[in-house]
Image (cartoon, rainbow, N blue to C red; front, side, top):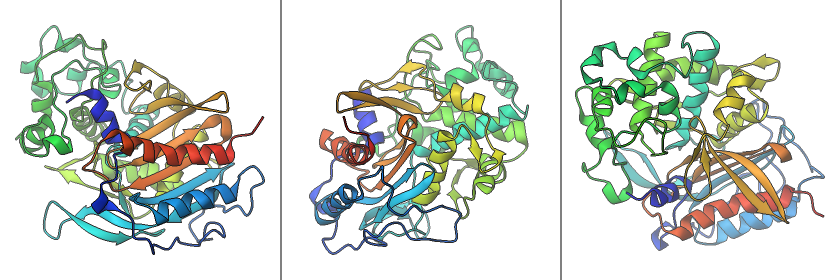
Length: 387
């Protein structure tokens, strides 16, 4: 699959007519500001640095048109300043297995499929394990974590480090699962059916020297999940709950497992307000209230541009990095992006976190990215200083 098509999958996809938002969808709390809930979020009234009327107009357009946007949440200056929820079609867990499409009325308590936003959350989990000395560092050879797979070693594969797993530069052949390859003719599906998924990933042929080029590979997260389990003695989702989610007030998160291992590549379900917690944690350098949950060093390292990716974006350790140009200025953003239009974007210069969830998983035309990214730009216009 072409890498540009992959990025469109992660950042958003065009809204097909059958995914149109019901015209009578009602926002939670209207435009009177976010609801005050007993969830630890400080809620701002009228932030003088935010054009609330512009955000309300944006949300009205989303609610009255064909955009299958499910939620928008905005945090500025550490406070929740805006949120709106809609109704629309979404992929939800099936009654017995798989997924089904269902019309969902979204609200503050609705868990949403994160898709590859899960990868960026896994990056935080890796950082915590390194901070605690459970993993020695990102320069560890990958086979040091998998001695049972030593028969797969070769001079080329021995060059693969944990850092190459985290920045998508392992140099191994991989066909990523997409709507266009929704059958079993992709490596992600074959990995999940394999008796030993890690053996499947590391058994793929070498296509380039490790560290030479960016090539998106969800199989890398199967390795990450196994490494966390080996290092901590817990599945990644259990370690994440105690080491990351509980300290920052995320409750009720669901993280699927595939063949007994946490699906770190895309199995997480969170509420939009909890997505905003992840964004705020990154914005604050890993600190939540009076507790350093993830080290500032790891946040700086993992959100540093390491690989040129696609569409003028870069990639760190499981984080996307880009610039948004507005009013003649470039605003750097750090992003967790997932197929279907899921995104957490952090703009340090503006003390801003923007969360979007959406449901256009099966369509990846250019208009899709423009619509989802357009929500982010609308928020930027409402917050960025003029002049």
